[in-house]
Length: 306
Image 1 (cartoon, one colour):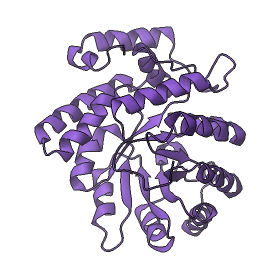
Image 2 (tube, rainbow, N blue to C red; image 1 turned 90 degrees about the vertical axis):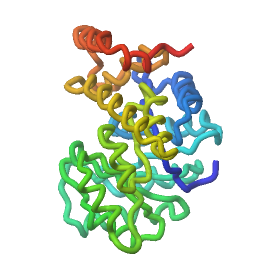
Image 3 (cartoon, rainbow, N blue to C red; image 1 turned 180 degrees about the vertical axis):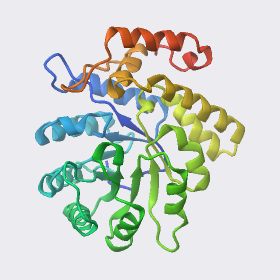
């Protein structure tokens, strides 16, 4: 698969299915990739939050990415998350991802310690320059990292580092997205990571969304984008509101465990989580299933796949 550009549209933040030994299950991963291709998503985001990438050793991350690229078989672009708490590891992961021909590389802000803007600039610049022929995106996820990279720094990186293209912003602020796309001159490409704001973000100029819920109901998430692009705004709004109901269903639950439970409900091999990431216990699973039973419209999007 040739690298870049990362397409506009819906990028599924792919889960990583683990076996009983907590190792990545290659056969299950291939089935999940096939399901996403069949559902019409525009790309795959590998080893992000939903993919539990931060819980894997670097060599495991490389292996999972290799499995996804092999399963994708040039049918769909792949974006590799290569973020790490240190620059050396992030650069190594980025070089490996580029060698596989991924469409793009995303790097979350280095976590645990907090850094000054100058330190962050040098970190993201170094990662981008380690794979200069591949498009790079800052992955801004303050809820998980503990701080935000910020609009000014992302914009500076896009303007000064040739292969930094934009940002995956996982916040819930339309004002923030608007600030990105309103910048004069060269501005960041914006992908949102919050399922609640996909449609309003598209309206103000976002390029697309990286969605964990696309593991569960890719057809529904794709409809938000496809309807908006076709100018069917009432249909897009209806899909967005239904997606918000799905988001509410997993609220308060262990996030990855809830996603994997719903994926398994659709007859797909979700696998187990990687410790200490909690699975969905029996009581919470029953509660989620009971809530879903009361929403016939939403349940219709979650029927088991043939």
